Image (cartoon, rainbow, N blue to C red; front, top):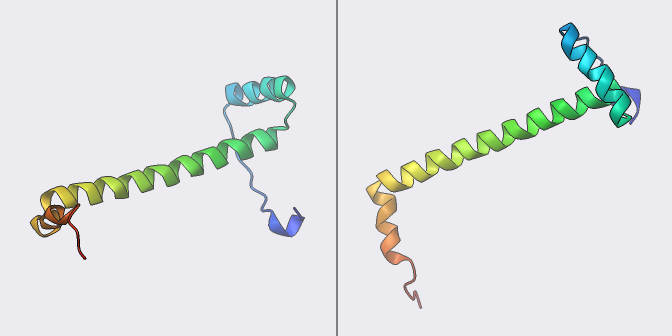
Length: 81
């Protein structure tokens, strides 16, 4: 990845988190940057999953409560030909 595809940010962490990062980078062989990047990627992926699950829950509730939608349940399994 070239530098034009990256953005630089500055963060401030509590000392205990920074100390844990130092320990983890030595154990895992990753840089702090790589660990923080993986953590953010994981967070964003979990957010996507949560948003999708929320949409599923809304649709499921709508399907259960909307009589116009539940009327189509009677058609399930019928031969349309």
